[in-house]
Amino acid sequence: MNSFGRYFRVTTWGESHGPAIGAVIDGCPPGLPLEPEEIQLELDRRKPGQSELTSPRQEQDSVQILSGVFEGRTLGTPISLVIWNRDQRSADYSALAGVYRPGHADFTYERKYGRRDYRGGGRSSGRETAGRVAAGAVARKLLAGRGIRVLAFARAIGGVSLSEEELGELTGGEPPSDPEALRARIYASPVRCPHPRAEPAMQEAIRRVAEYKDSLGGVVEVRAYGVPPGLGEPVFHKLGARIAQAVLSVGAVKGIEFGEGFRLAAMRGSQANDLFARDARGQVAPATNRAGGLAGGISTGLAIVCRAVVKPTSSIGRVQETVDARGQAVSLAVEGRHDPCIVLRVVPVIEHMVNLVLLDLLLAHGAMRLLGEER
Image 1: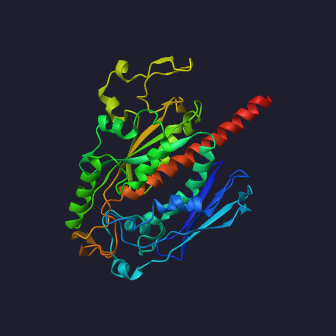
Image 2: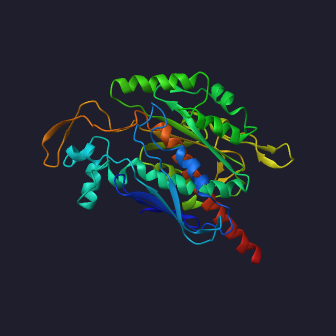
Image 3: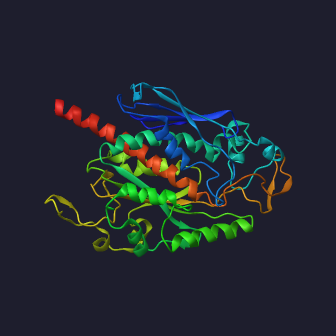
C-alpha cells in the first residue's frame, strides 16, 4: 500500500529517477493558512547535497501545491504536492539492471512484481520519503496549533553515542524550555546532533568511513511534547503500535523502542513501573517516564519518547560479492552518489512520520469524543 493514515490520509507516489515524486493529502481540515515556503523549509532539511557528509546529488526538492489550497488557505479537499526530479543520472545504474545489490530491495521487488526499476531503486529508493516530509510539514503545523511539538535528532552514529548525561545537556531539561529553538539547533548541525562532544566525533566517524568507501548506521531519537493524555486506541491501534508501524515503514529503519525500551528486560517491576503522583498543577500524572509516555497503548500526557535503529547505507563503493538475475557470481562496487551515513537525512523523515501519526490519532480522538458528547 502507498497510503498511510485514516483521518489524515497521505498517499505518496513517484520513483527516484522518474519525472517527479509527490504526495496527496486527504482529510486536512479547511481554513489552515498554508504556503509552499512552509513545506519547503521542511523539505530542505531532508534534501541531499547539504554538506560533505551527504550525497552530492543536487536536488532542490522544490515543492508545488497543485490543489487543495486557495488564497493561501486549505479548502478541505485533497492537497496534491509535486516535487520534480531535476538531477537524475540514470546511466549510473545501467550496469545494475540485472544485478542484485546487497542490502537493497532489488531481489524482493523482482520476486513480488516480476520486474523492477533499477534506476536508484525506483519506488524503494529513499527519495520516496520526500513526499512523507512534505505531508508531515502540514501535519506539523496543525499539531503546533494544539501545542504539540515533535523533535528528532541523532542519538548515535556508528560508535559515537550520547550518554544520558549528555542527552540532558542537549535538551536542557524535560520538557525543554524552548522546543523550537532546540529544533533549530538540531537542524543547524550537519549531523543533526548539536552536542559539543558528540557532533565533531560523529562528523569524524562519517569522514573516516567514507574514505574506506563504506557506510555507518545509527540511532534516531524522537520526543513529542504537549501530547494530551488519552491519545491512541486500545488493542490494534495502540499509539505505540501506530508509531512503530510508521517509523518502521521508513526503508532504512530496522528496530524501534519506547522509553527505557530493551533495558526493561533487565529490570524488576519495581524498577520499571511509572508510579503516579500529583504534578506541579496538582493533577495526577506519572512521576517518571520509563514507558516513554505510553500506557495501555494510550498517551499518558508525558513526552512520547522512542528511538529507531537506522542501518548503514546499503550502496557502498567497496567491492562486495553478489549474483546477477541468472545466479552468476558478480563482484560489485556500487557507483553513483550515495550517503556514507543516511541517519542525517532520516532524522526529518522519522520526525514527520510521528507528526502524521499524532495528527491522525488526534482527529480520531476528536471524532470519538464528539460522538460521546452527543450521546
